[in-house]
Structures are given as structure tokens and as C-alpha cells.
Length: 307
Ligand code: ATP
Ligand code: MN
Ligand code: MN
Image (tube, rainbow, N blue to C red):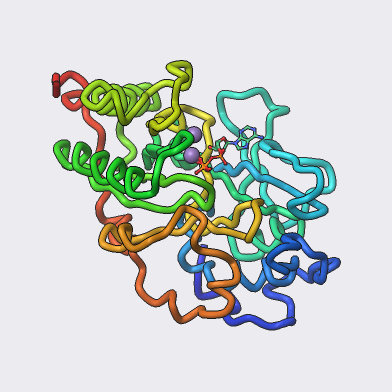
């Protein structure tokens, strides 16, 4: 995967090898964002999104008629799939369950051509299907939870992770909450990753039961934040950094610096239009240390009692 092959800039010319059909089709009517705009957006963010979506299984939210029409959450390859989209074979699944992947910029344009309005990668790559290379704690605010409380929760997750020497990066979901993402050296397996994140969520919830819950079934979420750790299991997906969301306003899941969090107004603040109108606002990468910050989850981290 090479970012250099990305034809940068925005315009009405095709990007890469793919000529879009129906480039003027409107995908987000309220924001006036077309299929061509979506391609232009991904041409701009391609260098940033590459490590998160290239060469790993992807689930796609496809909306052929835009956000107001039917939607398909697609986990497997399909008949007539664009030739630049790849088939990945999960070694433990039967041969019929082909997963979706891309290897280059044309692959991403293939996703746009296929009306992909959200890209949801796995937290592991086919280099080792059994060992996640990131963890995600998904902060889901219940009714009545304000933005500051979500930011506070993200900071607390970060602090708890730091006690294990693990780094944490924040992004808006493009919906309601924040995602705290941990870059991992892929050494621990899915069971360990899930167990680690479950313990972290449970401890946080038992220390502040008035603010947090760690299980969906502990319903009564009004006023509380669900610390959703269930993204950290084999085959689970979460929206990619820089992916667009099939929601009103054409929001994106935007990586942010920890220092930036307090000044944000909400999880859907950043939109496709912001990036198309001000691509230069994009110069500093708040996640530039993501790759070098990778550390492993170890057995010792699971056995320690932190309460
Ligand atoms: P929010 O901040 O609003 O919670 P989010 O991205 O955290 O945004 P959702 O968009 O509700 O939350 O996604 C929930 C999870 O379920 C994601 O991990 C996604 O990959 C997965 N998912 C989304 N749609 C489907 C679907 N139709 N079928 C199965 N899994 C899905
Ligand atoms: Mn969420
Ligand atoms: Mn969730």
C-alpha cells in the first residue's frame, strides 16, 4: 500500500483507475454530498486512513440510494464486486465465507463505487488473524449524558490504560460518542484482549456506578455511559478513523488530540464538507505516534488485581 500513488486534490476528474458511475448521485441530501464528493474526500484523507483500512478484513455499510434508502451491513464478498476490492480468506472459516479487503487506493475507490458510506475494519490483520493489533473502548452515552461527561470518561480510560504502559488515542465516532483506541503489538490473542478490556470496563463501572455501566443488560443507562468493550472479540468491527458515517450531515469519525477534546462540541462535529472545504486544516496528524506507540497486552496485565 502506497500513499504516494494517491492522486491528491479534489476535482471532477476520476481518482486512480476507477471511473465512478453516477458521480452526481446524492448520498447525503441534507449536506449535499454526492458520490463524487465522497471520492474527493477519500482522495484527501487516503494517506491518513491507509493504515487502518488496507490489508485487513472490512465490513461495509452500503447505501446505494444514500442515507435515506436501504442499507446493507456487508461482511462478505458479493457477486459482481468491483475488481479492485479483494477477497480475504479467514483460515478458520469455511471456504464460502469470504471476507472483504482492499490493498490500495483503487480498492478504496472501489468501495466508493459500491456505495460504501461506512468502513468498519477488524482489529486484526491477516498477518495474524488471532492477535488483535488494536483495542477499542467504545463510549456510548445514554440519554441525558453531556459531552463533558464523555470526555471525562475517555480521559479516565486513558489514565487506566497508562497504568499498564498502554497508549490511547481518541476519535469522535461521528455519531454520539467517543472511541478510545489502543495501538497493540499483536502478541495477545482475542480472549486476552477481550478479558483485559472487560476488566478495565468493569473496574471503572464498579468504581463509579453512578456514571458508568459495563454491560448492555445492566440496562437503566439513562444518565450513564456504557463502556462497550465488546468490539474486542474476533470478527467484531468498529468504524475506521476517517470513515464517513451514513448519518445526517455527513459526519466522519475523526481522530483528535487529547488537548483538543474539551473544545469540541460533540461526536458528529467533523464532516465531509469540513475536509473538502479546508483540506489544509488537516496538516497535523493527532495520531502520528499511533504506530510507534504499540505495546503488547501481557499475561501479567490480566492477573493483576487493580481494585
Ligand atoms: P455511536 O457513537 O453513535 O455509538 P458507533 O460507531 O460507536 O457510534 P454504531 O454505529 O451503532 O456505533 O456501531 C455499532 C457497532 O456495530 C460497530 O462496531 C459496527 O461495526 C457494528 N455494526 C454497525 N451496523 C451493524 C449491522 N447492521 N450489523 C452488525 N454490526 C453492525
Ligand atoms: Mn458507540
Ligand atoms: Mn457500542
